[in-house]
Amino acid sequence: MAFILVCVYLKTKAKKSITIAITIALILFTYSTWEEYKLRNKDSLRQVVIENVERFRNCRKPQNGYKIYECPECGAKKYVPFTCKSRLCTSCGTKAANDWADQIYHKLLKVPHRHVVFTIPERLRELLRDPRYLKILFSASKETMEEMLVQSNKKKKLKIGMIQVLQTYGSDMKWNPHLHCIVTEGGFDNNGDWIHFYFIPYRKWRRKWQYKLLTLLKKELPKGTETNVFIDRLFKDYPNGFVVNGKRRFEKREGWSMARYIGRYIKHPPIAESRIIAYDGKQVTFWYKDSKTDRKINVTMDKFEFVGLLLSHIPEKNFKIVRYVGIYSRRGYRHMQTEFHEGMIVLIKRSWREEIKKTFDYDPLICPYCNIEMELIGICFEGTESYPTDDTQPVKPPPNINLSQQERMRLIIAVIRGNQNGRGANIENVVSEAVKQGIDKEQVLYDIQRLKVQGEAYEPKSGEIRCVF
Image 1 (cartoon, rainbow, N blue to C red):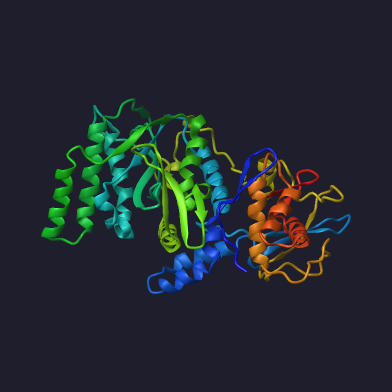
Image 2: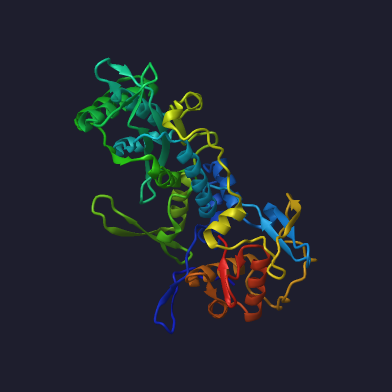
């Protein structure tokens, strides 16, 4: 029996509405959406897209492999599944963005920086779908900044620091390639002295960006009259140059927040799941904020069109969407003056356990029965459809289940997330809502216990349940 995924509002005694979140996974993997999309686009679907979607499907699933922890006192086991690290997964994307922000923060010099956004006109966007032309954005922006930050008295280039991140979508998910860059406000001269720039003329900046981009692009395009006319028209139609936004200035102490903001584009899907309003199995509705009017606009489109937009922003393999220039390149980083830096810091990467403790104030490897730390006893790299069946379950599953296990788990997780208030959701409310969705009460209790055993949920206090991710 299929279930309809819509934004459901349930009134409680406190007269507050509860929203069941609609996720990208629910849209892709229900109503056979992904399978049908593959058939419709079998001749044009890229292999890198298929790989990302299939990894996403198995994220934190037994068949993707898992670690096994056991309590040395009572023998209770916990199965911790591997994550997918797909570009479609919001959970994996959040962790990747946090890790990247940590690395960038410790890498930044203790000098002022600018957050610079290099944009292109709409007429150029479709042309830059080709990775050969898309990479020109990086070269053109690099040359633009190097020529803008020049010693005025000596006309010599400085060695600047620049971190470039490619974003290929706008707020409406359509193809809109542009660069977000972290750039030093100055650079080192040939003597190793730091030269600071307090002012960058915007008019010259915009025209310089336009000139560098179109000149490099002209060299790559097929030679001929058509290319010459196309490039000349772009110069004439935009006499003030292409838009560059570089007003955002920040110090080292703000570096993590800025890196985290930009890091969203590295491995995150092109839309936040909180912006998806409704899905009825045929159409998806989401909202975005118009940059010109600053107003929210609702968009309803066919689910296959939505999936097509979603998958179009997965880059090709080995195409680097993050690049480091000058001081921040691998070679330049080794030769930085130490007085501008905090020293060589060994960055300690937080484990999933540390992330959960920091985020939820809960240690997932403490036995709930003995209150002592569990020990790693094994790793399964070739998982199966479910975890080992010899593990004792607190409740036996009732017969005659209409929904598959995968469908039930997704629905119950959505109900838990929709009811989470503060530390957790009331279990009775979760059971009540799940029953209304067509799941047997005993089955709901069994599935909640299973989520706890798998490490996907925990009880912050008696009578409450909360999803770990």
